[in-house]
Amino acid sequence: MKLCFGTFGTVLKRCTGHTDKELIGTMALIIDPFSRYAVDDKRGKAAISKLLNCKIDFVDTSDNPKKKKEVAEEFESKVISFFNSDGILRVVLALLDIIYNDSDIENHYEFTFAECFGTDKRSFLTQCGFVFSDFLASTLLYTIKRRGNMDELAHKAITNDYLDNLVKEYKDNIQKKPDFIKIIIFPTAQIIGIFEQAVKERRIDKFIYCDPTLKINADLIYEADHFVSTLNNVIDKLEYENDIHQSISLFIDLLYEYQSYLSKNMLPEFCPKFLLEGDVCPMRTTGNYVPKFREENINGAKTFERKTLDYRNRICLLYKEIIEKSNGDIAVTPK
Image (cartoon, rainbow, N blue to C red; front, side):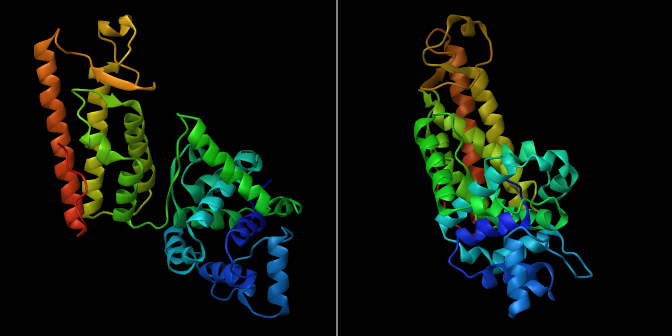
């Protein structure tokens, strides 16, 4: 299967109850205010049908091509409301699957993909967080710039059964594979919304609440790690330079610093003896982690307690600062 406008449009069509004219026409006007695909007549309907059947390329006739940020903002205001949360998940899973299976991207359209998505295909597929409006804008621009070499049968494979199977496999993996990374999908590019959603879904409040001088569950460490990588990937692409953006960047850096400190000073609860010689603990296991220094090293234990409490307090103070700047509610308070 190849990622062209036809497969992109068909995925969106299968995940919303809107008509072809409403969906494709609205997207067409985002790109080109005089697009023939938005004209409500026989020619317009015929053109939309050919687009969705992968028979023609989308032609942008506008004199001033829009930048991705502009397209993403238009998606937020005009298209995102077409989808409920289940539809958004189905769209993202389907597009990721199509991108994964489209060998033309790395063989013929590598530069075009990187230009539209901000990274290469392999790096993009390893991300665990996506801004939905940005994802759709990147895909739309890619399918417009990608010319020819279409598979006219590809759109027929995008059925409700295909989408249902992707969702089922994804949810099964979450339940059955402890190391499977859950995807976070941010509906819009509102930076505070992205931050708060990531804090909630990656359980950062529980990570900070947990007292590492006793023990800490490995899942919380993994979630914090994914929080850092997700926010770094997402926020770096957003064109913000305000106080909240800077504070969130500091929050991410501080959380990463705290994680690094834990990795050097904690070990799996049932740890091989060779790791007790001073090696850094590889934070990749199940169960719990416990402090490296305990009763047998009182000074080391006290230092660990003091530093971890200091990290947790600093993280919480920074979190409160971010929420206060956004006029939100305080949710994270360490004990």
